[in-house]
Length: 337
Figure (spheres, rainbow, N blue to C red):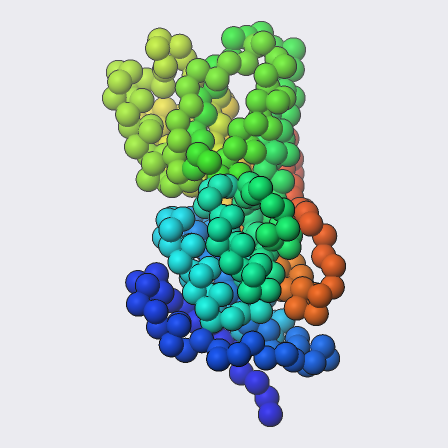
């Protein structure tokens, strides 16, 4: 008999009522290895839907689950760690075969992951890394190399300003503080740029990866500096953002106030959303570092291996590119996000 595969999308309010407790499997069936792949249930907790990148990332998981014949229980954490912890505990109660989640921050996961380990449910960390006292609490990490993304942003600036005098003042828009992605990009950027005394980060603010926060930051800066892009009477030469969403919001405000970018003000962003690539083509952005959201196929591949106790790599980075004003931009395929 053909088995149907489906997604269950649940709010955290439903999780809190204990509905999953009522419908949980009574026993965790022991399925023969040759049949196990057709019976996998994977619980996936996403941090939210704050950007086109995140939506693509979620759809990658859903589409890959369908192709792999894996049933997916999906939960949107709405940017709250406590919601993710509730979701993971509900997955444990339901006795899923594998848990995958995108941690909103790095710390605070040991207790719930220990519960998953005690229940013999392997855990895949996606997109953002965690810090834990016991690395055996999760099976593997699949995602991007945020440290290298930060380095690539800095390397572009080194190339662009080669042979030019300073000072070169940088305005930085950070992602969610405490997340491995934001911290990694910040550290990688400073690792390279900190070796060149011409560059100076004169302003840095947390934008929580939200386009709306990018707009707010720009509006506040212009309001406090007579509608000029200056910090303490210092002109901003370079804007660097930890994601496209924040940068696009920031640029919207600048352009609405008659402040052009891409020539006198260099713009570097991370993600490579379609809208950012379009602005790169329009010469309003100078460099976009790709952050590849298509993690679903690799997650499903590893999930199938984990349920039959095969070994998987502890660390898997997906391939990424860097798009710059020096490239032939006509050959970039539509991004899909």
